[in-house]
Image (tube, rainbow, N blue to C red; front, top):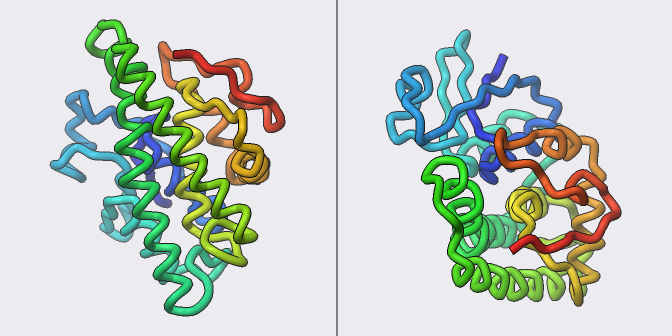
Length: 229
């Protein structure tokens, strides 16, 4: 069976979990904190980054969330993540990169550092200026999501795709860290509630970061997020 090395607030591991669950690929979770000395994890990926997917019987190790997702897109026919024409797949890849790079770099990564790593690892207080800047950038990204949803059935077009799961994975971490104000973003919030209500999403809502509890609204599919900056 596949073994997925992750930590609860890794958005890239969450993206892989969603895809594996949608495609009905059995896997088990193995905690791996990149900032700790874990010989097994670092022997699989010396770069020390999650996610890492390991199949001992096949002697196969997969790394990088996009590479992992495309591997299963090529090997598992259930629930296509990159459907449609070559142009449609190019748009899915464009948006996936935008969320994995842009949304993560602007919002998810700063929040993880300020609200998780500083609290649990460095024992420092978060920088309120960085948190406010991340909140402003969250609104900019949600504005773009609103536009996409106004013009398409799903983010990349007529069908649910990897773009939707990638964005939802990033937003789920931001939501856990109390960084989303959905005011004025009814389109994005409605889309996110749909994503959040999918069976594949339920395991994510039950995963907690030790020492950092989720906000009360986090696992409620219909609740509006409250801001904790």
